[in-house]
Image (cartoon, rainbow, N blue to C red; front, side, top):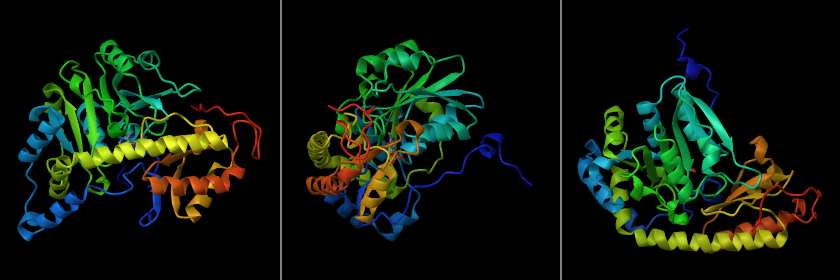
Length: 370
Ligand SMILES: Cc1ncc(COP(=O)(O)O)c(C=O)c1O
Protein backbone atom coordinates (compact mmCIF):
# COMPACT_ATOMS: atom_id res chain seq x y z
CA UNK A 1 0.00 0.00 0.00
CA UNK A 2 1.19 3.51 -0.79
CA UNK A 3 1.94 5.20 2.51
CA UNK A 4 1.65 8.93 3.16
CA UNK A 5 4.52 10.94 4.69
CA UNK A 6 5.24 10.03 8.33
CA UNK A 7 3.79 13.30 9.60
CA UNK A 8 0.51 12.64 7.77
CA UNK A 9 0.47 9.00 8.83
CA UNK A 10 0.49 10.11 12.46
CA UNK A 11 -2.15 12.80 11.97
CA UNK A 12 -5.47 12.33 13.76
CA UNK A 13 -8.58 12.60 11.58
CA UNK A 14 -10.00 16.11 11.50
CA UNK A 15 -13.65 16.28 12.54
CA UNK A 16 -15.23 19.27 10.88
CA UNK A 17 -17.81 21.14 12.95
CA UNK A 18 -21.44 20.25 12.45
CA UNK A 19 -23.17 21.36 9.28
CA UNK A 20 -26.74 22.59 8.79
CA UNK A 21 -26.15 25.90 10.57
CA UNK A 22 -28.10 28.02 8.07
CA UNK A 23 -31.16 29.82 9.51
CA UNK A 24 -30.12 29.18 13.13
CA UNK A 25 -28.70 31.70 15.58
CA UNK A 26 -25.02 31.10 14.80
CA UNK A 27 -23.08 32.01 17.92
CA UNK A 28 -20.55 29.20 17.51
CA UNK A 29 -17.96 30.40 14.94
CA UNK A 30 -17.30 34.05 15.90
CA UNK A 31 -18.69 35.13 12.54
CA UNK A 32 -20.39 38.39 11.71
CA UNK A 33 -23.99 37.45 12.63
CA UNK A 34 -25.82 40.08 10.57
CA UNK A 35 -24.02 39.79 7.22
CA UNK A 36 -21.72 42.00 5.18
CA UNK A 37 -22.44 45.51 3.92
CA UNK A 38 -25.35 45.32 1.41
CA UNK A 39 -23.25 47.14 -1.22
CA UNK A 40 -20.94 44.10 -1.31
CA UNK A 41 -23.77 41.80 -2.38
CA UNK A 42 -24.89 44.30 -5.04
CA UNK A 43 -21.32 44.57 -6.37
CA UNK A 44 -21.09 40.79 -6.54
CA UNK A 45 -24.34 40.51 -8.53
CA UNK A 46 -23.17 43.18 -10.97
CA UNK A 47 -19.92 41.34 -11.58
CA UNK A 48 -21.45 38.01 -12.44
CA UNK A 49 -21.15 37.63 -16.18
CA UNK A 50 -19.73 34.70 -18.11
CA UNK A 51 -16.52 36.40 -19.22
CA UNK A 52 -15.63 37.26 -15.67
CA UNK A 53 -16.29 33.77 -14.33
CA UNK A 54 -14.40 31.99 -17.10
CA UNK A 55 -11.21 34.03 -16.61
CA UNK A 56 -8.51 33.05 -14.12
CA UNK A 57 -8.19 35.59 -11.30
CA UNK A 58 -5.96 38.64 -11.76
CA UNK A 59 -4.31 39.89 -8.59
CA UNK A 60 -2.15 42.95 -9.07
CA UNK A 61 -4.77 45.71 -8.87
CA UNK A 62 -6.46 44.07 -5.90
CA UNK A 63 -3.16 43.61 -4.11
CA UNK A 64 -2.35 47.28 -4.58
CA UNK A 65 -5.78 48.45 -3.36
CA UNK A 66 -5.62 46.18 -0.31
CA UNK A 67 -2.04 47.26 0.42
CA UNK A 68 -3.16 50.92 0.32
CA UNK A 69 -6.05 50.06 2.64
CA UNK A 70 -3.73 48.41 5.18
CA UNK A 71 -1.09 51.15 4.82
CA UNK A 72 1.66 48.87 3.47
CA UNK A 73 3.31 48.50 0.07
CA UNK A 74 2.20 45.82 -2.40
CA UNK A 75 5.38 43.78 -1.88
CA UNK A 76 4.55 43.61 1.85
CA UNK A 77 1.15 41.95 1.25
CA UNK A 78 0.24 38.43 0.21
CA UNK A 79 -3.25 37.23 -0.56
CA UNK A 80 -4.38 33.96 1.01
CA UNK A 81 -7.43 31.74 0.94
CA UNK A 82 -8.37 32.78 4.47
CA UNK A 83 -6.08 32.89 7.51
CA UNK A 84 -6.01 29.08 7.41
CA UNK A 85 -4.21 29.25 4.07
CA UNK A 86 -1.93 32.02 5.37
CA UNK A 87 -0.87 29.70 8.20
CA UNK A 88 -0.23 26.91 5.69
CA UNK A 89 1.89 29.34 3.63
CA UNK A 90 4.06 30.06 6.68
CA UNK A 91 4.56 26.30 7.18
CA UNK A 92 5.19 25.60 3.47
CA UNK A 93 7.87 28.30 3.42
CA UNK A 94 9.58 28.00 6.79
CA UNK A 95 8.85 24.66 8.51
CA UNK A 96 10.73 21.41 8.06
CA UNK A 97 10.55 18.07 9.93
CA UNK A 98 11.49 18.46 13.61
CA UNK A 99 11.11 22.25 13.67
CA UNK A 100 9.22 23.65 16.64
CA UNK A 101 6.23 25.91 16.94
CA UNK A 102 5.26 27.67 20.17
CA UNK A 103 1.58 28.38 20.74
CA UNK A 104 -0.40 29.52 23.75
CA UNK A 105 -2.89 26.95 25.01
CA UNK A 106 -5.75 27.02 24.48
CA UNK A 107 -5.73 28.72 21.10
CA UNK A 108 -6.99 28.45 17.53
CA UNK A 109 -5.97 24.89 16.51
CA UNK A 110 -5.01 25.53 12.88
CA UNK A 111 -1.44 26.72 13.66
CA UNK A 112 -0.60 23.38 15.21
CA UNK A 113 -2.50 21.49 12.53
CA UNK A 114 -0.50 22.75 9.52
CA UNK A 115 2.72 22.72 11.52
CA UNK A 116 2.13 19.02 12.28
CA UNK A 117 1.36 18.29 8.61
CA UNK A 118 4.73 19.85 7.77
CA UNK A 119 6.40 17.42 10.20
CA UNK A 120 6.99 19.90 13.04
CA UNK A 121 6.58 19.56 16.81
CA UNK A 122 4.55 21.94 18.93
CA UNK A 123 5.23 23.33 22.40
CA UNK A 124 2.09 24.60 24.10
CA UNK A 125 2.42 27.32 26.71
CA UNK A 126 -0.60 27.21 29.01
CA UNK A 127 -2.39 30.32 30.19
CA UNK A 128 -2.25 30.52 33.98
CA UNK A 129 -5.36 29.84 36.05
CA UNK A 130 -6.43 33.46 35.65
CA UNK A 131 -6.04 33.27 31.87
CA UNK A 132 -2.90 35.40 31.86
CA UNK A 133 -0.04 34.92 29.43
CA UNK A 134 3.15 36.99 29.49
CA UNK A 135 6.12 37.51 27.18
CA UNK A 136 8.31 35.75 29.73
CA UNK A 137 6.16 32.59 29.60
CA UNK A 138 6.42 32.47 25.78
CA UNK A 139 10.06 33.52 25.39
CA UNK A 140 11.28 31.04 27.98
CA UNK A 141 9.85 28.22 25.83
CA UNK A 142 12.08 29.17 22.87
CA UNK A 143 14.94 26.79 22.04
CA UNK A 144 17.30 26.11 19.15
CA UNK A 145 14.64 24.27 17.15
CA UNK A 146 11.97 26.96 17.54
CA UNK A 147 11.08 28.19 14.07
CA UNK A 148 7.95 30.20 14.77
CA UNK A 149 5.41 31.30 17.34
CA UNK A 150 1.71 31.97 16.68
CA UNK A 151 -0.20 34.47 18.77
CA UNK A 152 -3.85 35.14 18.05
CA UNK A 153 -4.46 38.64 19.33
CA UNK A 154 -7.17 38.63 20.64
CA UNK A 155 -6.91 34.92 21.28
CA UNK A 156 -9.62 32.41 20.47
CA UNK A 157 -11.24 31.04 22.68
CA UNK A 158 -10.16 33.22 25.61
CA UNK A 159 -10.75 36.67 24.03
CA UNK A 160 -7.66 37.92 25.87
CA UNK A 161 -4.86 40.01 24.34
CA UNK A 162 -1.11 39.90 24.76
CA UNK A 163 -0.14 43.49 25.58
CA UNK A 164 1.83 45.60 23.11
CA UNK A 165 4.89 45.85 25.42
CA UNK A 166 4.85 42.07 25.76
CA UNK A 167 4.62 41.60 21.99
CA UNK A 168 7.53 44.00 21.49
CA UNK A 169 9.53 42.06 24.05
CA UNK A 170 8.86 38.76 22.28
CA UNK A 171 9.89 40.20 18.91
CA UNK A 172 13.12 41.63 20.36
CA UNK A 173 14.08 38.72 22.61
CA UNK A 174 13.44 36.01 20.01
CA UNK A 175 14.83 37.69 16.87
CA UNK A 176 15.38 34.35 15.06
CA UNK A 177 11.81 33.17 15.62
CA UNK A 178 9.12 34.14 13.12
CA UNK A 179 6.29 35.64 15.21
CA UNK A 180 2.87 35.43 13.59
CA UNK A 181 0.35 37.82 15.15
CA UNK A 182 -3.08 36.74 13.96
CA UNK A 183 -5.35 39.79 14.06
CA UNK A 184 -8.56 38.07 12.94
CA UNK A 185 -10.52 39.96 15.62
CA UNK A 186 -8.74 43.33 15.40
CA UNK A 187 -11.98 45.19 14.62
CA UNK A 188 -13.24 44.34 18.10
CA UNK A 189 -10.01 44.89 20.05
CA UNK A 190 -8.72 47.97 18.22
CA UNK A 191 -5.16 46.79 18.99
CA UNK A 192 -2.74 46.14 16.13
CA UNK A 193 0.98 45.69 15.52
CA UNK A 194 0.68 46.17 11.77
CA UNK A 195 2.73 49.41 11.78
CA UNK A 196 5.65 47.42 13.23
CA UNK A 197 6.33 45.20 10.19
CA UNK A 198 9.24 47.35 8.94
CA UNK A 199 10.74 47.68 12.41
CA UNK A 200 10.69 43.98 13.31
CA UNK A 201 12.08 41.69 10.59
CA UNK A 202 10.60 38.60 12.34
CA UNK A 203 6.98 39.86 12.45
CA UNK A 204 4.16 38.48 10.29
CA UNK A 205 0.64 39.87 10.74
CA UNK A 206 -2.48 38.20 9.37
CA UNK A 207 -5.88 39.75 8.75
CA UNK A 208 -9.09 38.15 7.51
CA UNK A 209 -12.35 39.15 5.84
CA UNK A 210 -14.12 36.26 7.61
CA UNK A 211 -14.99 37.93 10.90
CA UNK A 212 -16.17 41.56 11.25
CA UNK A 213 -16.31 42.01 7.44
CA UNK A 214 -18.81 39.14 7.19
CA UNK A 215 -17.26 37.30 4.21
CA UNK A 216 -16.31 33.94 5.77
CA UNK A 217 -17.74 31.90 2.87
CA UNK A 218 -15.48 33.61 0.34
CA UNK A 219 -12.21 32.75 2.14
CA UNK A 220 -9.93 35.75 1.93
CA UNK A 221 -7.07 36.61 4.22
CA UNK A 222 -3.96 38.75 3.93
CA UNK A 223 -0.41 38.30 5.15
CA UNK A 224 1.34 41.56 5.97
CA UNK A 225 5.06 41.41 6.56
CA UNK A 226 8.35 42.94 5.46
CA UNK A 227 9.34 42.33 1.84
CA UNK A 228 12.19 39.90 2.75
CA UNK A 229 9.82 37.46 4.43
CA UNK A 230 7.08 38.00 1.84
CA UNK A 231 9.29 37.18 -1.14
CA UNK A 232 9.97 33.46 -0.46
CA UNK A 233 6.36 33.02 0.67
CA UNK A 234 5.19 34.37 -2.67
CA UNK A 235 7.47 31.94 -4.51
CA UNK A 236 6.11 28.96 -2.52
CA UNK A 237 2.47 30.01 -2.83
CA UNK A 238 -0.35 28.24 -4.66
CA UNK A 239 -0.61 30.59 -7.68
CA UNK A 240 -4.44 30.76 -7.84
CA UNK A 241 -5.44 30.14 -4.22
CA UNK A 242 -7.68 33.21 -4.03
CA UNK A 243 -10.75 33.46 -6.25
CA UNK A 244 -12.03 36.49 -8.14
CA UNK A 245 -15.35 36.65 -6.26
CA UNK A 246 -13.52 37.02 -2.94
CA UNK A 247 -11.36 39.82 -4.30
CA UNK A 248 -14.26 41.73 -5.85
CA UNK A 249 -16.20 41.55 -2.59
CA UNK A 250 -13.23 42.54 -0.44
CA UNK A 251 -12.51 45.57 -2.62
CA UNK A 252 -16.13 46.70 -2.24
CA UNK A 253 -16.14 45.87 1.49
CA UNK A 254 -13.17 48.12 2.26
CA UNK A 255 -15.04 51.02 0.63
CA UNK A 256 -17.76 50.47 3.24
CA UNK A 257 -15.61 49.83 6.27
CA UNK A 258 -17.76 52.27 8.29
CA UNK A 259 -20.42 49.54 8.17
CA UNK A 260 -17.91 47.15 9.74
CA UNK A 261 -16.82 49.67 12.37
CA UNK A 262 -20.47 50.30 13.34
CA UNK A 263 -21.13 46.58 13.62
CA UNK A 264 -18.00 46.10 15.77
CA UNK A 265 -19.10 48.92 18.10
CA UNK A 266 -22.55 47.33 18.51
CA UNK A 267 -21.01 43.94 19.21
CA UNK A 268 -18.70 45.38 21.88
CA UNK A 269 -21.69 47.05 23.57
CA UNK A 270 -23.62 43.77 23.47
CA UNK A 271 -20.61 41.87 24.80
CA UNK A 272 -20.64 44.18 27.82
CA UNK A 273 -24.37 43.52 28.26
CA UNK A 274 -23.78 39.77 28.11
CA UNK A 275 -21.00 40.08 30.72
CA UNK A 276 -23.25 42.09 33.04
CA UNK A 277 -25.88 39.38 32.64
CA UNK A 278 -23.32 36.66 33.47
CA UNK A 279 -22.28 38.67 36.55
CA UNK A 280 -25.91 38.88 37.60
CA UNK A 281 -26.49 35.14 37.37
CA UNK A 282 -23.10 34.44 38.99
CA UNK A 283 -21.33 32.77 36.05
CA UNK A 284 -17.56 33.39 35.85
CA UNK A 285 -16.14 34.41 32.48
CA UNK A 286 -12.92 35.60 30.95
CA UNK A 287 -12.95 39.36 30.21
CA UNK A 288 -12.89 39.57 26.41
CA UNK A 289 -11.50 42.03 23.85
CA UNK A 290 -13.25 40.20 21.02
CA UNK A 291 -16.69 39.28 19.70
CA UNK A 292 -17.07 36.26 21.97
CA UNK A 293 -17.00 35.40 25.65
CA UNK A 294 -15.67 32.24 27.29
CA UNK A 295 -17.70 31.39 30.38
CA UNK A 296 -17.56 28.61 32.94
CA UNK A 297 -20.98 27.08 33.44
CA UNK A 298 -19.79 23.87 35.10
CA UNK A 299 -20.22 20.13 34.68
CA UNK A 300 -23.40 20.37 32.60
CA UNK A 301 -21.80 22.54 29.89
CA UNK A 302 -22.32 20.00 27.09
CA UNK A 303 -25.91 19.35 28.13
CA UNK A 304 -26.62 23.09 28.18
CA UNK A 305 -25.06 23.48 24.70
CA UNK A 306 -27.36 20.72 23.40
CA UNK A 307 -30.44 22.28 25.00
CA UNK A 308 -29.59 25.63 23.40
CA UNK A 309 -29.16 23.81 20.08
CA UNK A 310 -32.71 22.45 20.47
CA UNK A 311 -33.78 26.10 20.55
CA UNK A 312 -31.74 26.76 17.37
CA UNK A 313 -29.10 28.69 19.33
CA UNK A 314 -25.64 27.41 18.37
CA UNK A 315 -22.76 28.06 20.75
CA UNK A 316 -19.34 26.42 21.15
CA UNK A 317 -18.71 23.79 23.80
CA UNK A 318 -14.99 23.82 24.77
CA UNK A 319 -15.36 20.99 27.28
CA UNK A 320 -13.37 18.60 25.05
CA UNK A 321 -10.24 20.49 26.12
CA UNK A 322 -9.27 18.85 29.44
CA UNK A 323 -8.30 22.26 30.89
CA UNK A 324 -11.53 23.92 29.78
CA UNK A 325 -14.03 21.44 31.12
CA UNK A 326 -17.25 23.21 31.90
CA UNK A 327 -16.54 26.13 29.56
CA UNK A 328 -18.78 27.41 26.78
CA UNK A 329 -17.91 30.12 24.27
CA UNK A 330 -20.61 32.51 23.11
CA UNK A 331 -20.20 34.62 19.98
CA UNK A 332 -21.76 38.06 20.41
CA UNK A 333 -23.94 39.50 17.65
CA UNK A 334 -26.73 42.07 17.36
CA UNK A 335 -28.77 43.38 20.28
CA UNK A 336 -31.74 41.11 19.45
CA UNK A 337 -29.50 38.07 19.04
CA UNK A 338 -27.77 38.77 22.36
CA UNK A 339 -31.14 39.14 24.06
CA UNK A 340 -32.21 35.76 22.64
CA UNK A 341 -28.98 34.18 23.90
CA UNK A 342 -29.48 35.65 27.37
CA UNK A 343 -33.08 34.38 27.46
CA UNK A 344 -31.82 30.90 26.56
CA UNK A 345 -29.11 31.07 29.21
CA UNK A 346 -31.55 32.34 31.83
CA UNK A 347 -33.77 29.31 31.16
CA UNK A 348 -30.87 26.91 31.82
CA UNK A 349 -29.26 28.90 34.64
CA UNK A 350 -30.47 26.38 37.26
CA UNK A 351 -28.19 23.78 35.59
CA UNK A 352 -25.12 26.00 35.96
CA UNK A 353 -22.51 26.14 38.71
CA UNK A 354 -22.44 29.69 39.94
CA UNK A 355 -19.61 31.61 41.55
CA UNK A 356 -21.32 31.95 44.89
CA UNK A 357 -22.32 28.34 45.16
CA UNK A 358 -25.90 28.19 43.88
CA UNK A 359 -26.88 25.75 41.12
CA UNK A 360 -26.29 22.02 41.18
CA UNK A 361 -22.72 22.12 42.50
CA UNK A 362 -20.96 24.28 45.07
CA UNK A 363 -17.49 24.13 43.55
CA UNK A 364 -15.70 27.45 43.21
CA UNK A 365 -14.70 28.72 39.79
CA UNK A 366 -11.27 28.89 38.22
CA UNK A 367 -12.41 31.54 35.76
CA UNK A 368 -12.11 35.22 36.43
CA UNK A 369 -15.02 37.60 36.33
CA UNK A 370 -14.86 41.29 35.83
C1 LIG B 1 -7.80 33.38 15.81
C2 LIG B 1 -8.40 32.99 14.50
N1 LIG B 1 -7.71 33.17 13.37
C3 LIG B 1 -8.22 32.83 12.19
C4 LIG B 1 -9.47 32.26 12.07
C5 LIG B 1 -9.99 31.80 10.75
O1 LIG B 1 -9.90 32.76 9.80
P1 LIG B 1 -10.16 32.47 8.28
O2 LIG B 1 -11.63 32.29 8.09
O3 LIG B 1 -9.62 33.71 7.64
O4 LIG B 1 -9.39 31.25 7.84
C6 LIG B 1 -10.23 32.05 13.20
C7 LIG B 1 -11.56 31.44 13.08
O5 LIG B 1 -12.23 31.10 13.97
C8 LIG B 1 -9.68 32.43 14.45
O6 LIG B 1 -10.37 32.23 15.58
